Length: 328
Image (tube, rainbow, N blue to C red; front, top):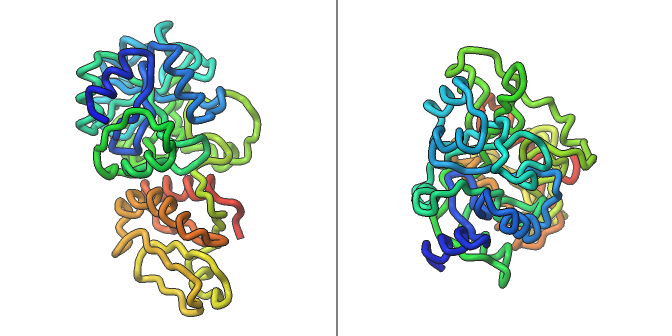
């Protein structure tokens, strides 16, 4: 599977998989209703969950949305990169992409292969994560192949994703800009650029929202990013490492080797997300680790939320909560 195969798919109302700096994306032309339908069908994605449209730059964004001085300022600082902006859409964008809403989520990716494709096809590209709905997003070429098997579309191997979690989504259609999905661009990063208040996500209230109401942004579904193995969240890593796992057949997911389980038996698997607790490394390894840990076919995965005050770890915590079966 080659660049040309993917280009042909995008130009002919079909789909392909492209690498990005966040996660691998299941891509199609944002102008093709037929192709968009194929994305939703392969992912088994609910129609209330919109897609992000990818463009080269802010000028291209202005062709499919009503941009502003604020969006231009943000684009100058964060594009290309992991910030998605929600803007009023123009008529050229199908309502299927936007979950029937008059807004569209737009991002300019930094991955060289994705940008090369945007230049080549000269089309905006809609691309949610390349996985079945609610499952763990892929951050490796091999993850995508395993996810879709014989149904896998043309695919470009762009190596491991540099960031490893999805983009921050910022709603610019409200009086005060509001973060709809946490990512590696923090609230503080954004406020530092636009010099005004930015609303944080509305707590965890949308995590418990089981309605079919259309969302302005992906990443707001109550259940998301879930491994096959049930994931349980302890109140703290201190409580987790002090518990007894001597008779259990489980997995312990820890930030780094500074943490150790004293009461563990031979059936326990201990997995570290980072050598030294580096937040960027933890985020980069999270999804691939969850996919790899599923291969052990254990009963449960136990972990905790990260207590450190860091933007990307807040995003990691959000993903863990949505992926979890329960909090202990």
